[in-house]
Picture 1 (cartoon, rainbow, N blue to C red):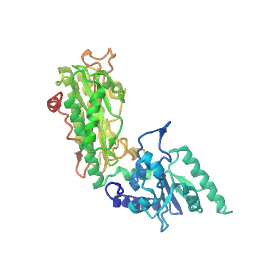
Picture 2: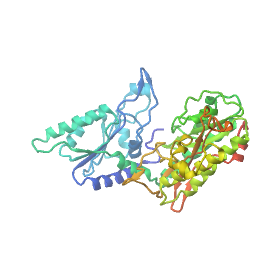
Picture 3: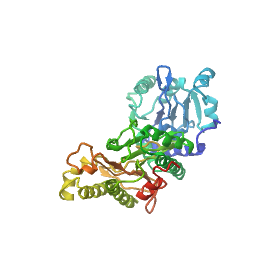
Length: 446
């Protein structure tokens, strides 16, 4: 049952070797890298909360347990060292299986494994004479303090060298750029996550009917995720009926879905630490009213035109600006704004109804790692990048300046795309979004 990292150990070995090549190019002197999970599993009094490994640590090791530390010593024969919890029959009786030292040595392909309790003694010795430490501060204040104390101790153990503490270089941007470009295997995992996410949205559409509660729809959505093979959610599901859809991060999910309203669901399933991120809107009664359809199609038109732009060389900012221009035009057509498109954009009048970006990187985290700008400029898309395309319009229910028929409407349509050499692959195409498709699935109970 417990036979090592998902997908096989070679995936993680290749990632570690790639990281070493990047570290040695950045620091030609003596260097060490340290990546740590939370050193204790979260508790609330005597209750354990669900534990998810730090994304970057999992990316490099596949090791899923808390209290895990990876140390990379690029110029040593013992290049990759893993510190893990020891086997403990009593704790395993209460909390579950642990790989322990032997399991980590057998399954995870590192050069050496130590008990995590020996981390300080072993690594303090390794830090002697090190000029550069690759590490991300502010992850865990207690562990940060331990690292700084170890650096000071290592300096003192080195005698009167006249050298100061090793410089600390943030490792997160380096790993973040690696994670930004997905391999063939990662694309397949992400595609699976998107397929599962789409199946959950379809299940929710079919279940939806007047007078059910948002949390009941959420239950159907997330149950389908589980049935399709997802271990956990990519993020807290947003299930927002009526005017709740105008709250961008609404997660209360406890109101009743009323006939004549629309329901916005923003939810994604995780598969092998990669997550989908889909938003769809469904009419509660099974069919869009005329104002709802006009409003929905305005967003859909812009969203589809943004996806058509995705190809290598295009900037994320170009896509966002295109969305702003398109949505501003639609706001004029809907009567939400009055004036000239260019002037409205210049004065940022659109922001009242479209207050967020058009997309974000997607991968192991729903808002994934990777730089958005390089040398102060919005970066250009390249093959292997994955991100969301999610324009929307939101009209506050008390907005007396908006046409009455649109007040309380919130529509966001979100897909996940993979940049290919000639364009893009829409990974979430199994989630219906055309009006006729949505109405076909809505409220069928099948």
